[in-house]
Every structure is written in structure tokens, then in C-alpha cells.
Image (tube, rainbow, N blue to C red):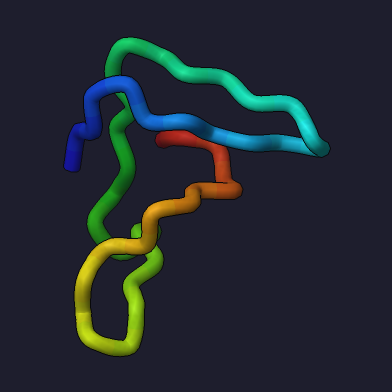
Length: 44
């Protein structure tokens, strides 16, 4: 899945690339099934 301008945080530093791509199985979800707002892993 591709996300435009997704903030990615690593060791307290944030990057906001134009497009971030993640494998579907790597995307964390909330208990209600919606995608989490905070990503703390590097994009694929």
C-alpha cells in the first residue's frame, strides 16, 4: 500500500517522504481494523 506524505519516525527523528510503500502484512492496525496513524518502521 502506498501512502502520500506519511511521517515516519526513527529514534526520535521524523522523515516525510513524498510516497512511502509498505507491504500489506507490515501495516499495523487498530483493534477496530483501521490503519494506525503512527508508523515506526521503515517503509519497504
